[in-house]
Amino acid sequence: MITTIPPVGILIDLPFGVLMWTSVAHFLLTVVMKEDAAFIILRVLRSANSPIHRAINLIKPSFIITRLTPLYCALVLFILRYYLLPLLVGFEVWNFYDMPLERLLLSAWADLGF
Image (cartoon, rainbow, N blue to C red; front, side):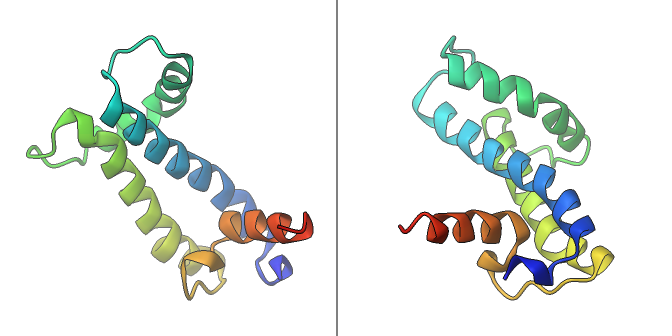
């Protein structure tokens, strides 16, 4: 199932997918914690996502508050992964589960028997 996507597509999509999911996790943690909390997982996510958040701040509209920046970043990365990457690399995405990272995780999940 994963072999229908070119290897270049997988190599390009994996970092974008990881950044997207870490941005979602960063947003979810900042919903229940202070943004500058010393929680180790939040510090790791903050340090991993800070370069992409600084880049997204250049195109972020002014009405989006700082606490929503990780969610906005995840949305931008999702749009890039869903629309732009398939056009550039040449594979088809019909739904969310056709994206390379999610398909890889679901096939690994199925191989484990869950």
